[in-house]
Amino acid sequence: MSGKLYIQTFGCQMNEYDADKMGDVLGASHGLTRVKSPSEADVLLMNTCSVREKAQEKVFSLLGRWKKLKRSRPDLIIGVGGCVASQEGEDIYRRAPCVDIVFGPQTLHRLPQMLDQVKTQGRPVLDISFPEIEKFDALPSPHAEVPAAFVSIMEGCSKYCSFCIVPFTRGEEISRSLDGVITEIQRLTRLGVREITLLGQNVNGYRGLMADGETADLALLLHYVAAIEEIGRIRFTTSHPAEVNDALIDAFAEIPKLASHFHLPVQSGSNNILAAMKRNYTVEEYIGTVRRLRAARPDLSLSSDFIIGFPGETDEDFEQTMKLINETGFDTSFSFVYSRRPGTPASALQDDVPEQTKKKRLKILQTRLEQSAGKISRAMVGTTQKVLVERPSRKDISEMAGRTSNNRMVNFKGRADLIGRFVDVTIKEALPNSLRGVLSEAPPTREDRSRLAS
Ligand code: SAM
Ligand code: F3S
Image (cartoon, rainbow, N blue to C red; front, side, top):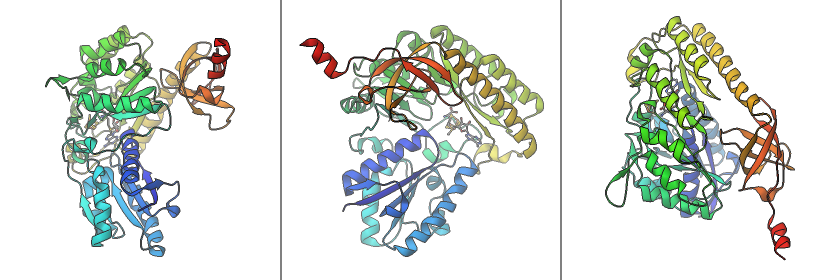
């Protein structure tokens, strides 16, 4: 079969990675090619997120629109995957009978069989099981369109923070083998990839089996990745503050290829709230970890996630979060209003912070975080940064775009043959969401080099 596939993704980087894998799997098995509009497609897939209520609501409103498409084209196949699928299971068909396939985050590699089943049996198929780590072994070779790629190193989460649905929708933490991860990265380097982001809900909980039967932690994995010559820069996300061990802190001193950026979600600056969230660390411990990280890597940029309005959050608790922000100097971070998720331990608590208060606190916090990130951007003006050139700039194709070590997008005049190379860019201007710079010295092109050699 050849045909067209449209994938709509909601949520985190893990979901974006999974969506790419869905495209790879169905491309290899059924020759499906991805298109940018649902009206062109023969198969429509939705990769859903249930971390907050808003993301979950989007699923059924989009299915309402897809139902209309199916009415005019009854052959259209509709699949719902990801965390909402995992959580709701058969209820998805009940609420939206236009759906043919319901699959979970860990069964996306079985999509080809599910698609065949729908076609031959003409009735809906459901598979939301957690079949260990089988998914990664069953996936086709990765593809890469830009020189910076994601590689998932683990699935699920076993931390059970009281507010979070992820352990229930993605299952317990399970790590890929060290060899499996390294082989995927080596394949990506052959496609021109030079920067890797290791992905997982808690990458620093990584415990990957090695060939000798021992397990590798994240720090050891980072050393192995750094030993791959073609890889020039390594990132990882997300980490849990309670699992930052000495070896990971040392890695920032020992591995120059490790980017100077660490996303370490704190959620709150109040010990009472952290305990109610079951985060397993205190603010003092978090600050201690940050101090040690900065001693290992003085220019480290630190970003975080915050939840505002968790049940019982008082003005005093919020003040403590603001104090932490003021004292830590966070870089670009994420902040959310608490969203009660049915089935989580916190859902039994009364969602007692008034909506108005939540909104007011969120505004204060976001304004402060923006100021803090803006200050870091402005301090970069005049400095020279190592940038991996990723692609032409979206607004002007005579310009290139790439990321700095601290994860900021920089646009600068440059040639397309620089894509995939690390260049020095002097920062000239700090804008709210990006930087502008000037190429310090363009490395020689292939033609320059052969001219010099002759
Ligand atoms: N594993 C990561 C960590 O260590 O915190 C985070 C994964 S979670 C999918 C991403 C972020 O969503 C969390 O850090 C948290 O700030 C936010 N989040 C999760 N559950 C939430 C809820 N019920 N309401 C609001 N925000 C939530
Ligand atoms: Fe969620 Fe906490 Fe895990 S935020 S993904 S349960 S570390």
